[in-house]
Length: 349
Image 1 (tube, rainbow, N blue to C red):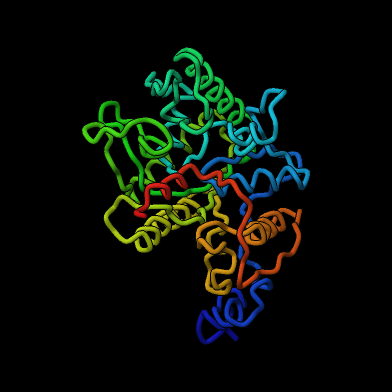
Image 2: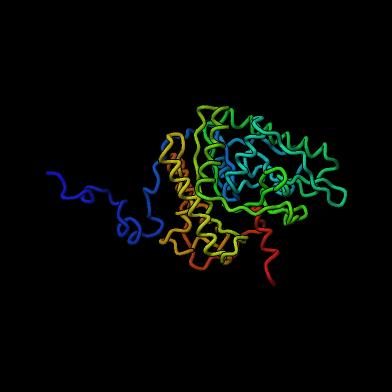
């Protein structure tokens, strides 16, 4: 006998009360079934907002093939490597918060567009407007800066052409553009480096259509170089540090993350080579009651990171440790790989 209505044949995971409201938060399961497998030897790239740095380290620690295509030169201390963004992502681009910047880097790397030769000179040292945090002390000359950028572009080419999967973590819809050449900056000029020019630097809030378009354009460049490349999208659960929209930051954050999540879901539905992993839901979801955040309500606790990665790795047969959330989380470790965290410095005192 056929069911009286379609809901009678749905699994438990389809119903809020037994799947979300009733279980212990750590028992929430069956949240994600990957579209494709990742074997231990499959080369995996990671890029995106600061939360993406956790994924690469976790893959490496579990013996999977995370690709560091731009390793640190010998002789640097652990702190020096971190300060220069070695080992945080597969390429030394720094944080890539928006699809526009991802498309920009890929277009430069594969020769679709020419990277600008713009540099910022501060106190006798040259800084890269498109990687303002990766070399804290800057470069001695423009030539040295451009050579270093070309090394990153070569690393992107190596990684994309050989990888099985690119894990890209979406972070923001807000960005700043150069009105003269049309490029997009990773952060607002005059924050991490540079000098803000109101006549040249233009704020932009990307729409759903623009985010969708920029991601598809980035995928097209990458898959032209490697037709077998698969894309795994995530959305960072780390909220905006600040917003330039004029809205309250709480509603601006909700808008930004909603757009990113909606685009990621749409692309995963429309394309067999794209999947979405729900890291955002695993941190911000109702069952967890904000317990995965530090007291600043922005930084994800180590336990929260471990919880997300247990779900991620477990889906590929490499589960991590089982964390226990705390309703009164303690302060986390110092150092924040998020470049946009510098915006907190400019808040009203």
